[in-house]
Amino acid sequence: MAKLYFRYGAMGCGKTMQLLQVAFNYEERGHRVCVIKPQTDIKNGTKLLTRIGPERETDFCFDRETNLYEEIRKNYAKVDCVLVDEAQFLTPTQADQLMLITVKLHIPVIAYGLRLNFRLNDGGFEGATRLLQIAHNIEELKTICECGHKATINARFVDDKLATSGPDVLIDGTDSKVEYRALCPVCYEKHLEGVR
Ligand SMILES: [Zn+2]
Image (cartoon, rainbow, N blue to C red; front, side, top):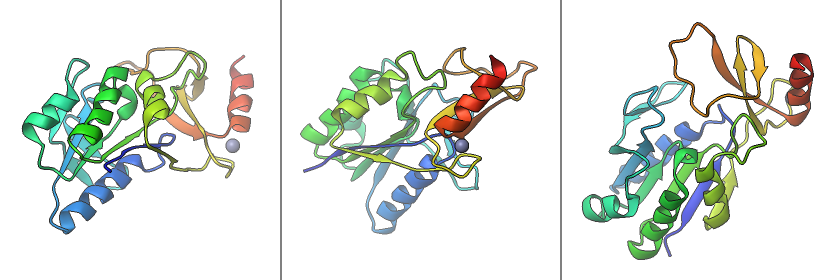
């Protein structure tokens, strides 16, 4: 039975790297994959980039209206695996469409994404939430905090100060320096006290 996998982890845990590795393994054995990502993640154009080098062109990028099940059924029904990057930006409906791909087209789908947004307390990413609810298999990809403990929180820093509000996706071009750091809950609280 084909399955829907959700592999989540904080920024910098190597989600895209692992996706590229899985694609490589399939293709090395003569199988085909379909690599997709949402247009929300436009910082790298239509490519998947990793911090340590490897990159790859996507097969297609999709917006919030794209019916992923129909798209795969029409154009990629012969692939052996569908790989989704930045899956937190899916709509809940699109997450359900990924499930339908496994059920009706018998193609496994592996979705990589963040579990929660940087604001932590307002419901998070609806795509990630839906995947956590429905995926056959859920796996955490681990990374470490600056203190060495396991990082679970994806914190946004603007000009080196922890930010707790703002839109999901910040458009570059402002004068502020925006970065994300993976933190454990203890270090997150310390940074939080610093900005209170
Ligand atoms: Zn820490």
